[in-house]
Image (cartoon, rainbow, N blue to C red; front, side):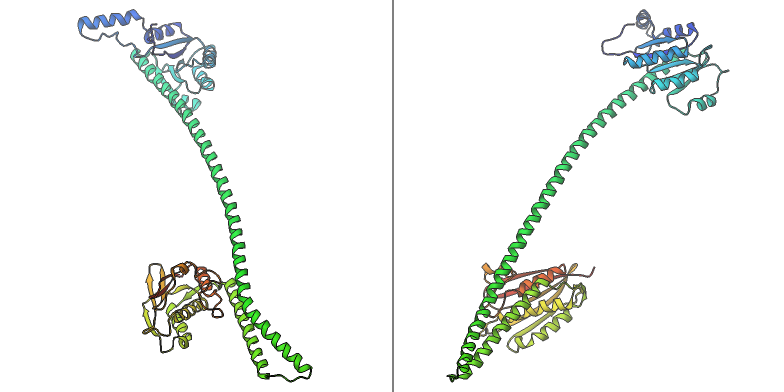
Length: 442
């Protein structure tokens, strides 16, 4: 058999106890080269394809076995040597050995991919009997005897191509599985690296948060010490003066001015009162209104806060209400009232006595899933270098004794605790606007 260098033979096994059947398959599937040359010459002379020109388009390699056991041995050896059979033509009746149906079942145990053609006479098993013994499968065809040469060639051609495609697909699936496995390993490695990076980042963030808490605690302690030291020294001076006066009285000597002792007592009480307010503000700052949120009518709380700040607003300051219909917000009345009152008081403090037309504007509006409240004044404004620090604990621009610097920090904690936000815009000499954004109830 002459084969071109780039075409591999397709291996076929014929299992039949009749020697003449083997000769027929050899003639049908492996015609001699001289026959092909003669066919080509005849076609050139007469301009037609001769009847003998039915050789397969691909070469076949045909082996023979006279009994089922011998065929099984050949399939086993071929698989071991890496020269597997693509198709097996198996006779049904092969006495005295096992029949073709049993041979087929055992062939598939040796090589599950081999395509089988059962060669059977009409008196042999029916297709239903064969299917019951072998099961429903796409690896099996029936060839009735006596068979046609063209039919045999077509079967051999189609089944060997089917077998080759299955092998190619298996190779591709193997390559694909290997590629998927490699990619999976890469992704697992990347995931492990990402998890490690996230764990490292979480540890760093935890350390940073710890450092920030310590820093904030340090600032709080320093601010508290600074705020308390002033009135505490004031109290100490006055108590020392009172002690000296009492010692003078105890020695029987008259006091130059007994009224000075009363004044010193009043001053000492003022100092302790100042310390008490500082401690209350610190406790409030630490608590930051952690009451659970409820639906709150913003405009009603604003009216209550305006009424409470009425004495400070007085008749000198013109109050502008710019209220629009808004939905209830998720907050607490006490917390919002504290924030609004604090901002209104700050607004009045920002209005100089000599201001010709002082005013404070209070506004509400709906903005998507939020309600916005603005408290605006046309006072002295906030210097740019201070604008970014006004929410810091203990930061204040008021004179000593007029503020602890915790009011706006408390306001910020209350609003953010409800899931809202508070911001500030200010122009020195033209006024300040505090803007509060509050969420709607969930």
